[in-house]
Amino acid sequence: MSEPDWDPKSDAVLRDQLAAYDEMRERCPVAYSELLGWSLFRHEDLVRALNDPDTYSNAVSSHRSVPNGTDPPEHTEYRRLIEPYFRTEKMEAFEPRCRAIASNLVRSLLGHGEVEVIGELAQSFAVQVQCAFLGWPADMRQPLRLWMRKNREATLAQDRAAMVEIAREFDGYIDELLGTRRTADAQASQDVTASLLRERVWGRPLRNEEIVSILRNWTVGEIGTISAAVGILVHYFSEHPDLCRRLRAEPSPLPGAIDEVLRIHGPLVANRRITTRPVEIGGRTIGARERISLNWIAANRDGRAFEDAEAFRLDRDPAANLLYGAGIHVCPGAPLARMELRVVMEELLGRTSRLDLVPDKPPTKAVYPASGFATLPMRIE
Ligand code: HEM
Image (cartoon, rainbow, N blue to C red):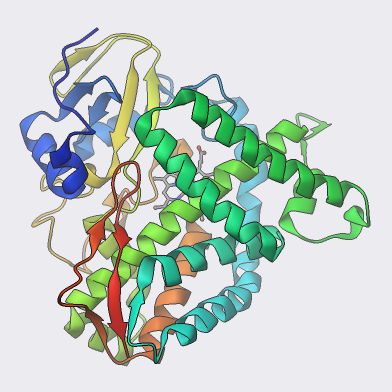
């Protein structure tokens, strides 16, 4: 057991994750902690791990996670099945539903004086879009929100028993949804959940537990990161009214602007790997079977990869931005995420003239494993 170099749950980290991870990247870029094993903070080190899946394996847990907890060749087969769900034509077909959700939510915020952006816009948007995308009923929204909160709390507390129980609870919801699609006219249903039931891998139908795991991976991928991203974007835009004015007058740079804001303030903290052999990285020697945590937030703010890293610049090389990861596990949901975020920001900027923080009610930051803001009181006109 190595001596800890830091404590990811210390007050300083929980108070301001961005500053804490920046500090770690400069002071101790490969750092051991009991909670996370070896955290990598530098862009160069993350890229090295991402491009070497033989050494940095995703088989981090005995609990099944499709596709994120698998390695090739298994992973390759699952990705073949998953990627078509996020193709351009699918996203274009889904965009009007997504826009209707965004515009209803934005309109419901107007004329109320003060609103709380995380609860009233960011989380509602993420959950409603996810249910619409998967073909889930509206009465799944509230259980999903509660489930995400419990999941985050158990992860922070590293309460293994609670984490297993929460995973089971999710599986229960999904089993029920799958059950209704197996009966009725499931064959005719066009929704994403029903179509997963018809998928095949290695020449056989997908097993129930594989479908549940895929849906859990998409749901965790979607709700936490999208709601964090919406909060971060609204906060950033409220602090940069000139940028808002420019984007209202000329919206075409919006997709690039969104990726750049989320590079500066990442909505996702970290993902895991496990070493399959001893490695030397960032001047440290790490043994085989050691836990690795890839810290996206720190890597995307690394001045070695991004000149004047905290500055918003639209002329940066988008390939260096690790917002959606890189290598074989690069986010398959990125086309959906990018479309959702563009649409919600178009609706927000298009329907408002002012986004202001409330002077006596500053935002509160989200704590690990979440990023962004826990609450974001604002006046929206
Ligand atoms: C702003 C929103 C999002 C961000 C920042 C994000 C970021 C990421 C990142 C960095 C990875 C790489 C993880 C790794 O290397 O271990 C990833 C993987 C993944 N994401 Fe996303 N994601 C977002 C939205 C979504 C959405 C909307 C979905 C699906 C509905 C999704 C589904 C997944 C899945 C299934 C993986 C695992 C891929 C694999 O292991 O091959 N994500 N995401």
